[in-house]
Length: 76
Length: 457
Image (cartoon, rainbow over all chains, first blue to last red; front, side, top):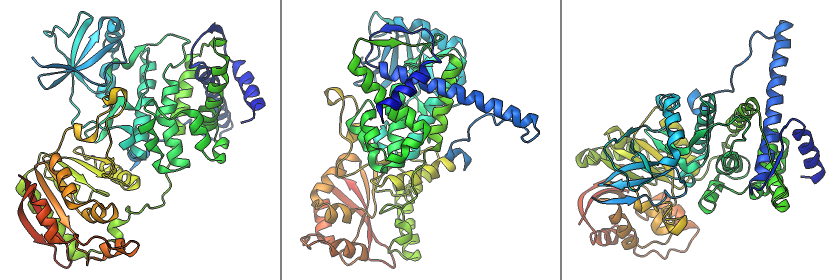
């Protein structure tokens, strides 16, 4: 992965994060990445909800699926 | 009273497992009191247990504990057989991953969070994965990241992605990396196309990069707050990422064994009849089926009520078997991956953290069907070594001898020099009789194969 891409991605993600305090931890990279992942997931859910609301408003879609599909073994 | 602290229970200051007079207990230490009381008081414990996600326990009021740190002593429901992630097939690990995420989601709803997401905290019980570490829960503090996120990625997402996108055998890396597969290694091993999967890009590739980037910076690190709604969304995202992972449907060498076997229908039915009769006479409590494939013969022992472990070297065959037992809700059969010529060793700290296969609950009956030629010819193992190994496992042995004239053995000999002069029924019996008494010998009709019932001397 190109470092520039990571930096851009990182900067974009951090814009949704508040209250940054200095501390020492070997898992720092994981925590920073988690913050980005959580922010992305939050945005994705928000977009999904608004999109479905829009489709519902336009009468294209009736209801929002509440969850992802069940595990494979449970479908059988 | 005989008391012994469990060899793998030393990392968590919240408590530890110990054996006393053959029973397993867990000491909950005073430092975990608040979290323990919250787990039970909030209703989370009951919710998880009622949904079959967490192993149940009972509190032993009268027990004084093993030291002054004791807050409570609990006795968890006993898991019959302990297995490890490197012995699980793809869908077993996938179900374990989904279970962990479901528990984390439920915990967050109740104001708690998982502080561990180790695959070793999951065991298979009554045919399903269940979380066994009651002390892995702590109170959730608003804004705090999920402390076990890295561990989840290393223990679950990394091996599942590698098995799905690179090679199904890569779950064996869990044997080398007990705290999960390092993400930089995972990122290197995954194919280029996985960069275009947003979940794998973020949770594995960028995660690996971020670890590297901030590791180098040392003390210049940051503490971050994450909104709970975003954390819940991320858990849901991880769940979707795991659900999306599938294994390729190519068949490995043995998955189609029953389709391409040299048995006629008549011979196959007769073999089943013989094994059913012998197993009925033995009336076993615990059966290990070695080389079980997709469990056609394990089912016989399972139907008779025995607790069965079905081992096979082929990860696809084990996966097919697992999916079958989940579909049929079979509770007493556990399929596991095992290379009999290199069985799971004792590993981890002091070589005692994770048990070798022979240190676990051993069977009273062992099935070795359509396997001896692979051990003796493909792996050059002399009969006496095989017999001595099997003798240590269980009292009864149901073993099939396949002569050199059999087409499957002929196939094995096609590509190697026949140095197996001693591979004949006479030597087989002579060597096994050093350790066993032969009880019955039955020819399988319409074939040249023979099924023996033997009993340890």
